[in-house]
Length: 66
Image (spheres, rainbow, N blue to C red):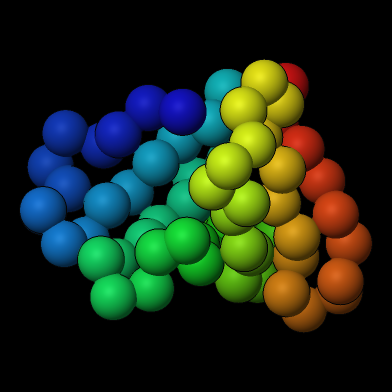
């Protein structure tokens, strides 16, 4: 994931190449993020890496970033 350089300390926009999509989070919401490609909030399991695991809070679908 890449951080959009004009993000503010509390409002962060991220881009993920593997999903070709933007995510947004705020310090009060993390580890919940908003996925623009899914048009839904997702939860990031902070203890996961390679791949990072998420759940789409609207559909209940689990997915990962590889």
